[in-house]
Image (cartoon, rainbow, N blue to C red; front, side, top):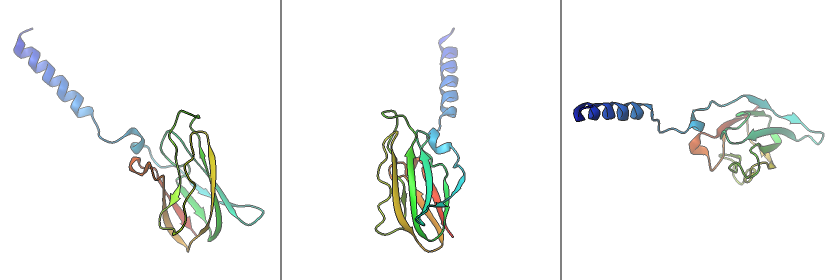
Length: 139
């Protein structure tokens, strides 16, 4: 093959590979999932379980509660030693530290008082750039 033709073939291959690249991570492309409504426990605390894992998403990504005491149970579904830790923090709640970091395979819970009715954002503080966010709706 002549050198000029070989150069054209290499250039076409490089351009084809460049056209397929994307700076977004695979996790950031995954859609958010579902809505979960808290259920009232016997002591009057509303409880909702949220799972997360290697997909860097909250399941469900929308939580519906009423004003009052709420317990969020965060379960990291990744196998121990095979996934990143995750937390869940509702932004804009003063003095509310969130769940803390749940290591792969770990379950943590966090109890707080839901604020006035409205929509609030929650995030994984270490994976917000990957799109690990959700919405807390207080009725």
